[in-house]
Image 1 (cartoon, rainbow, N blue to C red):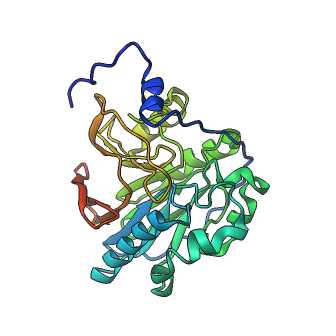
Image 2 (cartoon, rainbow, N blue to C red):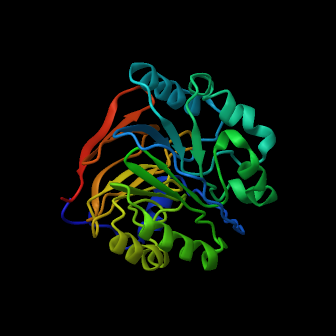
Length: 297
């Protein structure tokens, strides 16, 4: 849309809270460390699935996971990205069977690797350390990068007291050193959003200049319980995927919105050296959105 919808005198957050029935949301804090694994071989294509706010352990998560498995059976994927809040409500690793192993059993049995980041709910137990240590979550640290095919992923800890004093220089140097055709940053919290939390000026100031300078084409996040895809902002598309199983919230499109929906689901992405195809699906296997990102020549 070219123009944000007219709102009453209530703020956007107040209006969305009313639409959602007055939901309230807590906050958490985390510390950070880092480790960067060695890159793998670089084939010319990569297929992956992504979702966030998935760890409800209920029928909604299972329905999304079933559709993800259906995509994998139709055309195998190389990995799955989980953009945080992997275990509700408090990140307790003892719930991992109900919130991860059981829902994604078909993908795990097919040998599809997962790579996660920590969300605000994940750090409520032992600061998220048990999740970092849980090998099936594929976390090489509280932040880390991995090169797969034409894509390099930069997986961040965006929680309230993440150690940006260490993480930001690491991100800057890692982005500068990357030779990947596609640079994809993953964090739990939104930077641009038309949802309940809205835009984050602090994150925009901290990360936006790096994204622009080093050519980050895609940022994937959760936290907002909706699906959002922005128009390209200084070369970056922002993709919100807090639709993996948690209760949904309403969304009001704004001037940055290219597509949005309040539905459970996930995205299927396929990268070549020149394009990333994005297909978003709901928990019934119906299309939500599709687009193609084209690399600058």
